[in-house]
Length: 417
Image (tube, rainbow, N blue to C red; front, top):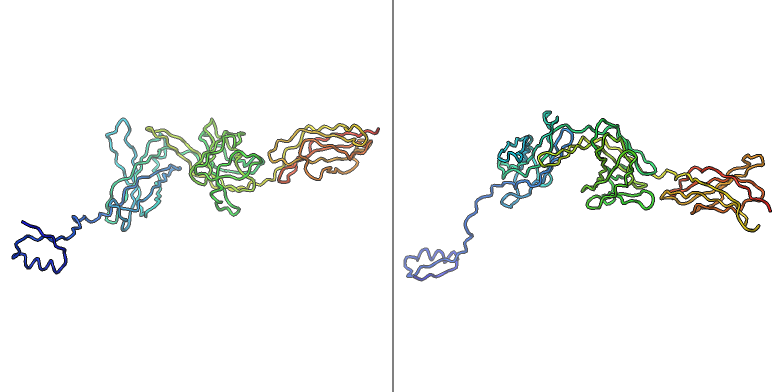
């Protein structure tokens, strides 16, 4: 038997049908086949793969990404509903065969992209002892069908730590001093800091970076993605030891470690002059359950904003001494020396002189002898008149023009020859 392949032109196909009985050979039409028919898409949204949860006060805040496509890899059509379910007792390693029910606690419409929901816990889950809570999200199409549950994420039930109250921020020379109302608790306080503009809006995120130890006076700050955090000594330790972590956002987190009692405050030394910062605070409780280390945070305090302005004078110079100097009449002087100032933004010093009468009283106003700041901790007064007694005082001046109060005075007379 012979086969003849013939193109599938409509006229040829009609001729084949009419004349097939008289043909001595079997003719095969060479029509391209589209393959077996595909079943219609069920329009099932892909399951969520990245659900995460955070316990804040008596709430659980959930985040996930709603997929754009169905399980058939085509765009989702129609409305999508997310159902949040909670497992009050996830299986433990001792009872892996037990499969507790994931009870629905919330349903809400969602769109492709970031998803968000909150679950306000019942009072029975906001008291100790703490236990493990599991959460999942399931996406349903307009026909109420789903491709299944998401991955599971965990939080802890139990009592949340007390909120931080009366948060205060004050700019001081070292940085920004943060204080709050002390509580009878050992839970550490997490302080979140955001760089803001003068009108209170967030500043350029590229400036929100943990500052490295300043070579001069504390100045600008932060982007926090993958920039290494600053060293622990950037936060002062008058009330508590503090470190900075580096979260993937534009917020710097300043944390105080667990200690016997509430510290009531700390100093942020990584601020920059001329910048404004917004701070919030919350206490953090760490709980370990069934191999999971979980954080249980208090509600966030109301935000406070403070500007870091350099209006603080440097330290007062100390150790001033005065001695007559000069080997000849032409270079006779009163030589002054004092202890160097250690302020990182020190620009120099100013020398003030007052004449003293024969009775030991001040005989005139204090006169500054230098027109520009003196760089080193020494000065030669070559304008002193022989036989006159003078009182000298020294002030320190920083790069912002702030001047310290004068240190203790010393008196000296340039003797006549």
